[in-house]
Length: 275
Image (cartoon, rainbow, N blue to C red):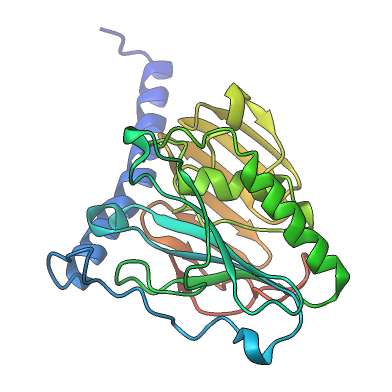
């Protein structure tokens, strides 16, 4: 069995990587269990509005919003579910774009384009607004592009919780095709690193920088919005620089959150912890 200096260095590096990923995941599971109120019945779990989407009747301008909420039941200990809600100028209701696995194995489509509550609780979990754009012909045009991208998503016939393709793979796919959105998905959006069509090189979900990924299991992101992220087995560990913040698997972002209404290069603001 090797025992030389190089072997000891490699062993210590592997141990450091294991601790860096496993410690926050363990803390995230503990946090999720501590905050859980016990088993939740999906039929009775909250799905009502959280009041974050502007009412269509008093908001004539076009609106795009991106949300993330902790996933249902045990999955919430590790990751989030993301979706896009959009309302063209003058529209009387929002259209919600998301991917769900229910019914896919029986021949149903994974992509859901429907008039659901734009900012509703996700089976009892309150969503966080990640990004918002409002007003003008530009936003209306972006909504049209969102719709076209959603209808051409390459994995409408399949869904896999880990490592993808899943709901976060779908939103990352749309975001890459819509760089004007400048979307920085949280590190808990497991599946965002699963690149479509077997690709291993692409832009980051924000539409800038570079992303390397091997089947969503091993990869790297380097981009102005995301900072530096290392993906290992679908879990993301990273460092943001504007301002400095940690991105931890299971726990999310530790540091100021992005202002969902700001432009791509506006300084971040918000709370110190966001899943």
